[in-house]
Image (tube, rainbow, N blue to C red):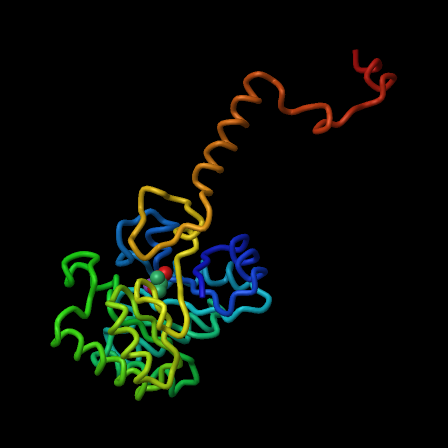
Length: 256
Ligand code: KIV
Ligand code: NA
């Protein structure tokens, strides 16, 4: 699984043969320039989901439920999950948390909506966790994660994202579940992996968590392309004769 947030990127990610595209609330950071996912709204999610779905022919599209869209009440959670499906055209939703959201997961799946769980580092709770750090360290925290994963499975999730936890714990959780785990910063023993597409492509090389592998350096390529364009506009080597339209000499004479 990879994220995508707009039409052109979705067409490319989909064409690569990926199984699933996540329209993550990480769009708050990646697309909107916020420093957390907390400001992201339902309307933001729907706007980006619709664009991604228009660009996707074959992958499953999963939409993140944003901050506070599933905490106020079960009714509101089901209604918001339904909006991501009906208005955003998502095929499944993802939400963060363990036992505290289990009843909510149950209610949403009861409405016929597939739910993906998300445990470990859950960025919507970053202020409570005191920063972006590895989760599930120590026996108590590890046991809590294992039982949260079981709770989610019993509540009906079809998969669980494990973010930023020790690889040994991810392995143990993966082995103890029948639904697939999808890791990010959780090691190779998960059933699948997910990355933020802009991290993988090297759009912003100043931000690189340990778990990211950069498969390209688009930041430098984009800056260099823009630099070259500006240079050629200034020295008038762009536009060239191959980029222009001409009019007949006699037509032109009439205008003088
Ligand atoms: O919002 C997101 O991109 C995510 C993934 C990193 C799992 O939740
Ligand atoms: Na997210």
